[in-house]
Amino acid sequence: MRLSVISGASMAYQEEQLQRHNSLDDASELESLLPGSPEGPRHRGHRDNLSISSIASSVSSILAPGPHKTASVTNILYFITFIASYAGGFFELPLTRLIEDIICHDYYDVASSTQPIDESLCKEDTIQKELAYLLAVLSILYAIVAFIAAFPWGIAADKVGRKPIVAVAMAGLLIGALMELAVVYWSDIFPITAIWASAAGQFIGGGNGVLIAVVLSMIADATSEEDRAIAFLRTHVASLCGNLLSPSLAGFVMERAGPWVPPFIGIGLFSLGGVALFFLPETRTRKDVTQDSTEAGIPSSDSTISQIVGQFRDSLSILTSPSLILLVLTALCSMPVMDSTLTFLNQFVSKRYQIKIAQTGYVQSTYGVASIIMTLFILPWISGLLIDPATPAKWRAKNEQYRDLSLARWSYAILFIGALTLGLSPTLGGFVFGLLLMAIGSGFGSLSKSLMSIYVDPAHRSRLFSLVGMVEVLGSVFSQPLLAGLFSLGLRWHGEWIGLPYLGLAALIALSAFLMLFVRIPRANGAAAVSRDHEEA
Image (cartoon, rainbow, N blue to C red; front, side, top):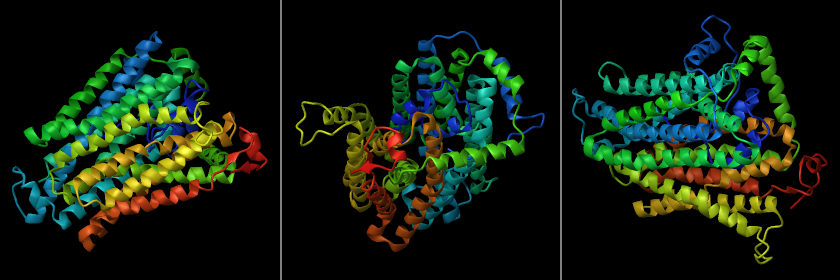
């Protein structure tokens, strides 16, 4: 369970997306905010008595909206974002170890599962292959369920209000986490593959994707256009800090109290975020919610399918520039890069460098701290320096667009070197150095999205980023299977081939970097120039 509000630091995209609208007015608005999710196609609404809208309406009656102030709303949302993100780190690390221990018991045919097997004995290739397979399938199922559930819950958020959907989405995530823990705890009753059923928890509320979209929508509701960019940045920082700093503390607790204590700490923290909901006012007025509910119910299956097809065709119709098509294709790289620094990193580092899974949390947090420093300080400083009139002409960019293109190309280059270092490094120190290089290039996603926005007019940017969200979801579907498959192949070939997953990632990054070489900035700023197909290097 992990809440990652902004995948790839895509603040430029979030600002463009919500600067013009104070709410998610249609399904494409929801899809453009999905992270990793990123993101997905629509799903027809249910018209039976127990519909999504009826569930959300029931919650809405309990969590009644009221007057609000911008500061109180945004501060509570920052807190919920941070605490939910931080809680997620207390699940992934111990869950990986607990699943590994169950597979280890089966491998050695040890009947009693009450006592864990020495972790050093669980690094056999067969055990690690099965662990990678289980986690990869779980990741695919989470992506598919998010794909399906996003659209109807997005409609519900616009019709019954934001706050109840946040509550339902958080409840669904908590149910999914509890299902995972239940399967692991009663492993003598349930087969370990039953853990895949936990993905169904995202049907309740739509999972991370809907939660992220609605939180950002509430921030847009409660802030002015002048303050919105800063509010999004603070939300991004809250999520980044929670996601990337919690593994070290989770590892610390695991080393001293075992793998079962951190998940319950995570449940407590996540529940604390739920308590904060009672202090969160509804950002959409009851009048608007009531009006929407009376004027338009849940759409029929036929109308919804027609809407899906129409919006998808509209999204494809804006891809008139070859450079824009290339930039959209690079979005396939976002999720593999993200996954390689999260759950997969824990298993890989533990196996290759023969350290406990609990200790991999420190490695992961090193990357987190470096990414935060890069996002908040180094990248903004370099961006300002490249367009500063005092900068020598040799290094100064023509304008912001050329600056972003140059930074994006360099980010991909550094990212490639970092992934190559991760795959080839024989020592843990070298691996950490590779992670630092990856952190330096971590702005590639936001830079690419910033470039995409100059190829279409503002009225069509919502459609553009809906399409980008769908591409990122496609990346999330093949990401974990790709890493797991290459990991299993590397174990089969033995020796230095164990680094094959990161070598494969480096090849994918190299392909994206190659595509970036053919991206051209339009002669005139805006979509008008692109529509005339006049571009220059």
